[in-house]
Image (cartoon, rainbow over all chains, first blue to last red):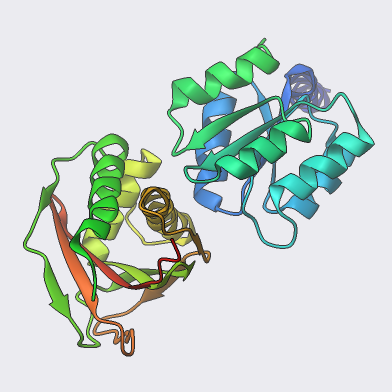
Length: 143
Length: 157
């Protein structure tokens, strides 16, 4: 009986954890560089967001549809499908999608194209944590 | 012939990145021209450049230096040069070269970059064939990075 209750408690704690994660605002981080995804994901998790990741534009579109994130952080230059094409597909699927482009310097023309395609904002790489969080919180306040 | 003024974007970009991202004192060594195949480091990041400037940019360092830089970028110890450490060093090359490319564009040379490639191993021989490399040695408290800029310039303006 005691063992059964312990199992129930463990399950209860796990279920409670899942419930809390489910309630957190969800951000889809898309970058082909594992380092950039890890850096952004750690920062967002520390600030109370749940994070899902994608490593190219095609994965971003697929994960947007399956995960329904509250916000997307999207790199521009990626293999398979670039960030601008992925942004256009996501906006066609959900016109209210909130997408922030994460871009290297020297991509001004691409940033303008992204803004015309419906991106809400852009952050320059290498991003400063406070600059990234300022842009994220503007679109999607933390809990 | 490599124009010295066109090297400055690489130096400035490297300084900016290293000082802001890894928070270490950075000192530039003496520039030199090389045409040998040898690279100085066990960890090399190569990026291709195409457009009005074309060629290769190489970042070469020891594994010890690469691990120390990766540790700063990741904010955690890097005892083994693993996939995440590799990605961080590749991204360093990507960002420095990307910012330098933006600087080259201001001089009228518009170019695009290929994704970074990591080449590891002692005594690695990388040839830029008939393009001489301008080597920019960067000294850090954790070792050296050598940036080799092997570019040809085609200015249409």
